[in-house]
Image (cartoon, rainbow, N blue to C red; front, side, top):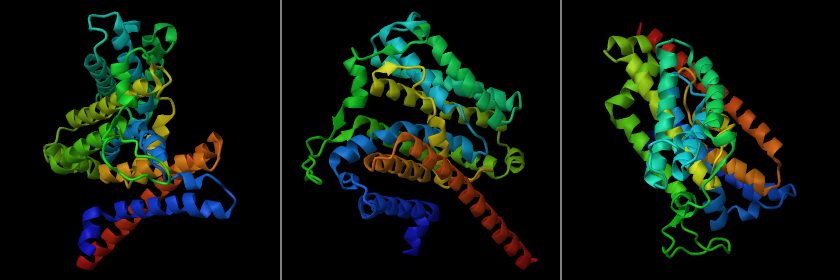
Length: 360
């Protein structure tokens, strides 16, 4: 049991336990206080449509954000970067707007998706340049680009209006299609098996890729080294400038992909598609065990936290809580996540100091 717990990680075990408790509160405890709707949680329609699809966009933003936060930085601009990716992909796809009237071929789904991701990577390069070359604090830098990129998204769209892609079924397929629909899975609470959304499969694949990158490559080890001790990382021969730019490029590229999927899901490349999503993404990263000072955090922990936030939002919708109450809950969750992160960090520092005192 101890070996299994160590392999999973204590933080991840805590997240799984919190997820189980939250589901119990939604499905059972809520009924004790007169709330109805919790019994609808365990149905394939709710789990595959309302939960599995709802966590995808925030999940992608949080996965990219984790890379930056582990290194001791922050990227508040991911929501606006997603808006840029959404507008650029739709613009290229239908041939309108700033990018749609260029040399890029229109009507090609692959080119449109690649253009949205590339736009996000360019935004990441800009963030990395401001943080490394201009030496602006990452919080201030990305707070500025949050506003700047939001404005750029409107400038890229024709007259700042959404670009419809409803007539592009090959593109909207990314959001509406289901996989494994023919698998003989029994009904759940009277709801038939609907298959796994393509969006969810994309999230899982990206999560696994970034997890391998962070856990089993020199790049990932360098990211943790920078977050743990920047001076020691530099003395060890790590190029801090190149690494930081690479981290923001990864965050921007994943955010661009999230914007592409937002365009497919909402059937429009809207300049406001990603507005406000950065709060949920950052909340998930800190809730997943990342430290505000860097050097700690895992992709799997972030993924579990995204599931927790998604289940929380879904449960509150089922129980009839309005959007404003959900925002209050999300804000309190962020404060609690950061407070827990700080408490863990202080506890580890005390343990380390006690161990050093005993050795001396």
